[in-house]
Image 1 (cartoon, rainbow, N blue to C red):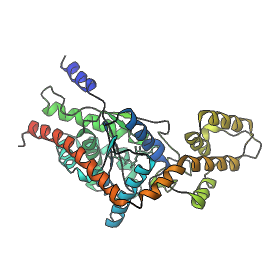
Image 2: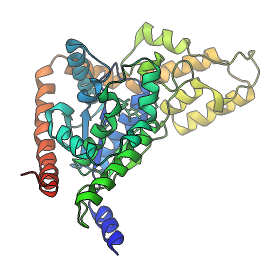
Image 3: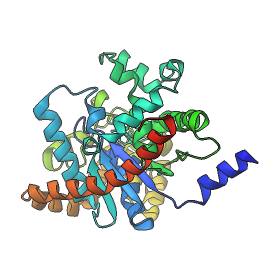
Length: 338
Ligand code: TYM
């Protein structure tokens, strides 16, 4: 009965969408097709209920350069707005403009076993790659959970690599509700949402990631873009032989920018051996140029008006902070902190 009541209060509330991106490097096609593209769609599906932010606190776990962090945060904001984020429909802000998340992260830390954090796949991977194993890196999921829970988000549109973080978030919300909720849902349990590009491959066929150095930047164009696309690693198969569309990075990227009809046609050409990788890469390049042409133009214009970008972020933070304070006040009261 108790359980039923909890569940229904979680599901009857309105959907609220939230997601973040770390400004830890140039935003790439993995970020776009895995996350940003669905963010842009969702702002129309749930106008007024979308919260998107630039996770600059999180980026501190890997970036220790004042100017760089500042620049990348601004670049990420420019990217998002140029790609079509509408500040009238979605609340767009910098994570650090809502410092309340750090307090909620602390509350979550007090109910979360260390053993849970030690299971973090992303933590282990990063340490293996030589990123310093700071307490911040280990407790990264606590801050991410706080990001989601403080806004009482229900839907978190992310790429597949964030699944464990969302599971941790649900666990942490459960620990906190059990410890302090007295049958009430203090923190709502979110679910992850994926797009068709939930795992976008990079130039070498591994997951596209800043840390693997295999990315294509969303706003790369001209020669540098051409060089990257033509350099995508492919199998060595003689011209005229059939190609396997399901095991090929060029095709995997092509289907993200082409229409379903164009994709079906390209699949046929692969299977019939009617196209070589060189030609497929050229067609991918043309599609990428077409897909991002407007956004590139908008970005150039926006870059001339950085005051407006700052204004949007500040305005977004005001809205986000109001919501965050409401949750935090309830949680403070529940734990016995005035
Ligand atoms: P980050 O900055 O690594 O990536 C941002 C988003 O891009 C997605 N993504 C990909 N999707 C498909 N294929 C790829 N190759 C690929 N590479 C990246 C990620 O899944 C993500 O959705 N921890 C988060 C940032 C964060 C956050 C949050 C997200 C902080 N707080 C709260 C959601 C909710 C991260 O590091 O994303």
